[in-house]
Amino acid sequence: VQLQASGGGLVQAGAFLRLSCAASGRTFSRYAIGWFRQAPGKEREFVATIKWDGTYTYYVDSVKGRFTISRDNAKNTGYLQMNSLKPEDTAVYYCAASRYTYSAYLKDSLGYDSWGPGTLVTVSS
Image 1 (spheres, rainbow, N blue to C red):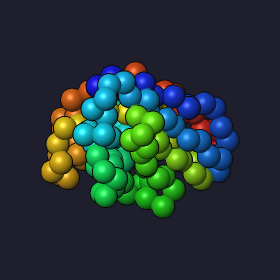
Image 2: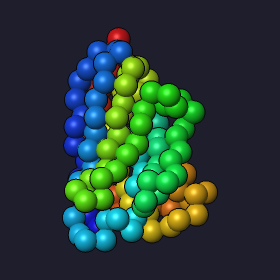
Image 3: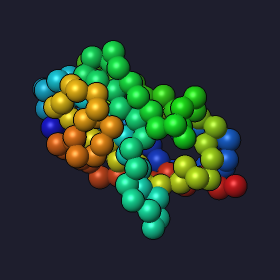
């Protein structure tokens, strides 16, 4: 599956953005979707994941209560709603797809097969 993330931009602290992850291919619904981010000078970080059927979601502690991951399999698209953005959320955000269903694998970038180019999110203070 090929992925393309979009929706990034420059916003002020406290604002919101919704990132989209558009997928090509008819097997999108079989994949878990994950969002990762990489801030300047830092390693790539797991942000959130959602299983193929939406029954399981998981977030890194720093975004719990502010970010919501979702998906629309009919549209071959995943989403990351980001509210109450903070300057520390500034990063390039990537979406990825995983064939695994074991939740532990979905919290690590090694569990993902396909990656799309990232979209930049910049949050000013």
